Length: 449
Image (cartoon, rainbow, N blue to C red; front, side, top):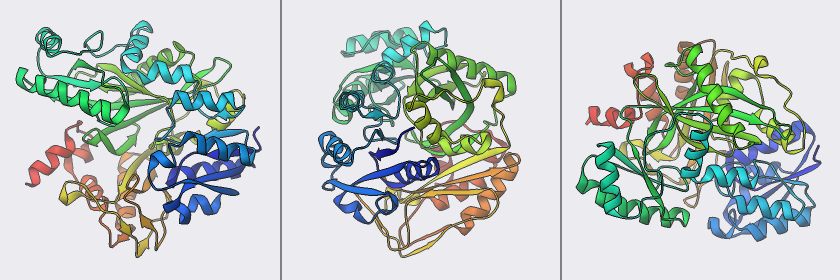
């Protein structure tokens, strides 16, 4: 096992990793930008090093500074968290070349699944259903129009690299497609340094279901059930729950087996997530793979009792996964609400600023992953997350009741947050019935207007 790990991240995920390391008896090194000097991950790590100014490119994406910090502090491994360099194969290779273990998948895993066209091909070869779409990158409007004619509208243009909804456009006609192709290419180039896009058949009113997997260096791969990430805004997840209210045991088993086949086809190592779209007929299609720990991993921890960050560290250290598939049991129901410093009544406009009043929820079934405190400044330079509210109940209705109560206790002032939005969802009849699709948020606000 490692004796010292550097966390190449910030905020709640950096704090989450530090806590796991402390429980494993591992010393930690935090890196931070100049504005983050007062952050809790800096305070609670055993050592901390400033790696640059406010901009991400000067700090949390500054590979030479991070590697220098790792070498100065003599760490054995680096945990990238999620975001920033978490899925950067080049960074993982540099770590390995410097004899520093990268706590995550192999560079080859990341490259093969980071390119969405290559990922789809890997899934297809593994016998996993994929969404109908272009076989190659689409570069010209003539190609795009021909493909759309064959598949029939609606179609969706997607960036071949990256994620988070960038470089993605839904099209219902030729005029929209031509404009969307050029816009998506420009957006993909700006966001990922790669202008390549492809086209898929757009599945209307789907559920977004992801399967959590773990793989070790000894060829052992298991899944830890699903998370329903359907409630999104502009492809950014807002609420996740497990188990999904639309999956039965038979479909859960089938999707879990498909995820394992997909991961085994590339010899996947460490934690990862296979993302599927589920249509109204309960047919599922491979969408992409996230080669990192996910923001919403705590709800899987809640129902399985397995600490995913500790598992990542153990796997990176060469240990075998200590569970067989039949050992994984699911207990109750869990929901995660992402509390962001955004104003849901003003099109989710960011609301950075100082937190003057902070009252945190607690009690039965409540977990809060956060890095904020009274007097903390939500920075305009980074992600606007205040924290993640995770609730766990004996069943879905119990989890919803706990979530409502916890949201009522949660006070963050004077900045605007998404707490009122989450309260609204927890009282929505469609949500309460578990009957919703990826257009839920848009329909919710359209109804109010």
